[in-house]
Image 1 (tube, rainbow, N blue to C red):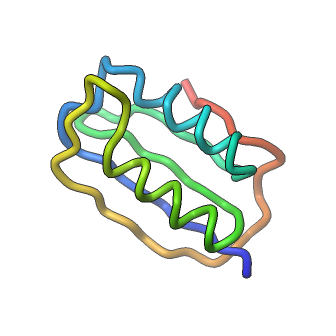
Image 2 (image 1 turned 90 degrees about the vertical axis):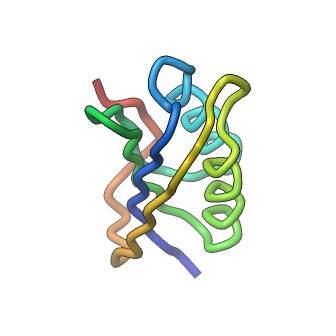
Length: 90
């Protein structure tokens, strides 16, 4: 089953290569979507299979080596098949 989630990751997530971590893992899991930094968090949208998205959520809870995730907000959305790949938005 295809899913889409919109996720906001809070804590020490800026300046620790979180966007690259998400892009690399999302690509490895064949997820499509985007990730970007906001003023106080990292925001990402993932589209793909339910199993792949569940694995990505677990990876987001840990983050890269120097990150410290304090909170995650997940919003389930309707699958849109909007993305052709996974990219970092600047």
